[in-house]
Image (cartoon, rainbow, N blue to C red; front, side):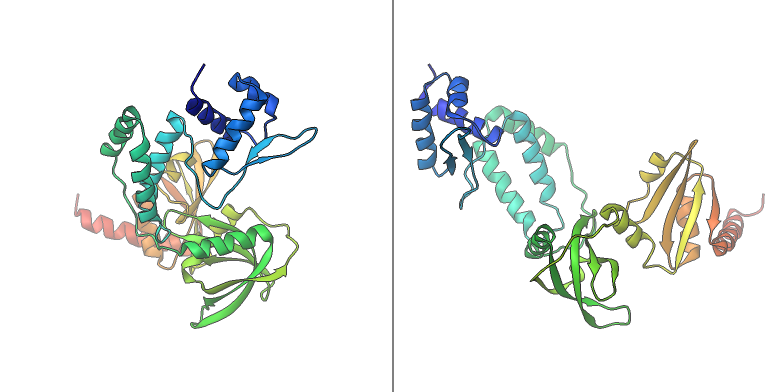
Length: 317
């Protein structure tokens, strides 16, 4: 029969696997009596694990959230995935999480079996992280907005207006959307009576109110935010038919830069915004695919200017 320590660890793993177990189910899984299960549950409680028990028919044991985070039991794949994810998180866009991720990675490395430490080390030594010029946001802000989304309560904050100067905004938050560089909030703007997108790094004095709201029918948050950040801030919105598969174009166009609509037949439509048509034409040419301008007509003129410059640069013949 396995030792008490090994059995208690197995019990902990079972409790973490699903929401609830009866004593009989746990006893059958562990090959012990119900009384042994009760003793092992008490051992887990003594170690700081909040194991709750419900009496009566249908009752059983479940592990709950506690004031302290006890160690987790991870299998091999989970341990490697966690270590790699922490490595990536160390270069993230949430202020302070980089150091926290490195501390968590160091703790995980201390308790890993040597064979797993070697595998994680191999992944780490063969991997570099390319961190873009992202804007960091306050983790407390993320928590405040996440709770407001969950609890359906309105949020107030200051936000820069287009004409300059901060303005007070009251919104009904729905979802946060993160890109590789920035965080956005999709919310219903109460004063402007419409859906809006807000950059988290531009918010100031964010405070959740006690005013609960009834959730509205809303567009898909990811698609809405993508449309907002690729089109609305710009003077021009270009629509260009690209003679290439949508997946190939998406590999070259980050979602915060442009939207790619699949037309089938090896073609797609690229939608992207910009304030400078000459620069837009240059970016489209650099994709390396045949393309035709659908809108606006001014982009065709910009493409013609670019063609003349390139021809002059190529020289005669």
